Image (tube, rainbow over the protein chains, first blue to last red):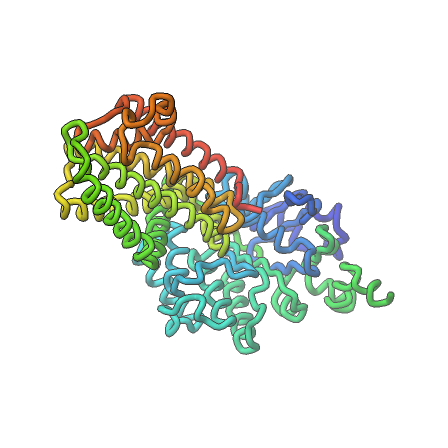
Length: 268
Length: 269
């Protein structure tokens, strides 16, 4: 794992990075650097790998570089340097092949707010080249799964915050992606939906889907993720299996505060 | 971690052309266009009706024949061209600007669509809007007995290529603009003056000799003259030069827009 030389890793014995020698990682990021036009450094030399089938948590405070990293993976941002591969496909050079493997639910609502729920999900299927028949049944299934069927003809702007979040999730799953990237998927949703979503994500992961999750809720990450990385100031500061955080650091919260410098701020 | 050890199937390469993706962009754009039918179609038809009635019919009845044609027949191609240019420019510039403003451009950025497909999808609806606008104006003009198309393929060439060129220009402005005011700058300061100076209402010989060069360096002069030739067979400009200017503009704009998409100008962070 490239991150090993840069970030402090917790253990090597059972880390998913070992898998790399025998199989193609679901996601491989090597020396990613992103500097915005304003000169702000979004990400500085981040390297990590996500094994196929992993549930990977990507934690960090606001402005740490989580969304920037995700935007570079999904094509919303241009990386300044470094490489990103999705199941061995270069996400910059062969971006079309790489995109076909990814489903993405962003933190902010990047939606035509005047479009209907059904259209938003259906159009995304169309962009992925899905045929009308296949798309229709998949859209119906996802609307049903996220309890959006009765809201199918409503415009996005008429929906509540929780419903809007569900639309983004349905849209991210329309192409049945191998790698599902979720940027704060439960922000602003009620407890019932959050728990329902957790169950659904665990189900998807059990079926072999690789999930890359960012969240501000440590409880969420601790409950769902197998591998957890922590970023701070645009750099990867910790990476390891969840059990290692618990065993060696006494829990995720303590490790998170130490990795992000939050413990020093608290002490000061 | 057992699920982590399952070997994924090798990814299938993307098809050469994502036809369904391209069609979906067109469907989305059409749906967006149909949300504002009054602004998109009724407004230019009403505006063209007024131009045809006042300048062509009322004023025109007191003006002598130009090249053997009634003044109404002479001005109609110019009015048509002005509306086509506006329709093309407004369609693409507003589409791109709002997709950036509301961030739904990200839907296409995260999808397996090529830049050519993204651009072609937008342009297809630009051309559709221009053609529908043109058909409406021709129907209105027919009520005044002024509609005539002598060479339909040539007529279609001017509609499609001029729409393409200004649709592409609209994309550039849509990518560049950071507010609504910037979105209208080109229309106010370039498109409207050049179209009025391009010979909508007058021939070059009506201009004072020392001002005629303005018409000859104005691309709108060639668009209007070309369209007029296809409709009534009257032209003041070299047809070959007009075709070369129009095709050249469309090609240059295509390359510029493709390059802007490739580097992510105005699209990617």
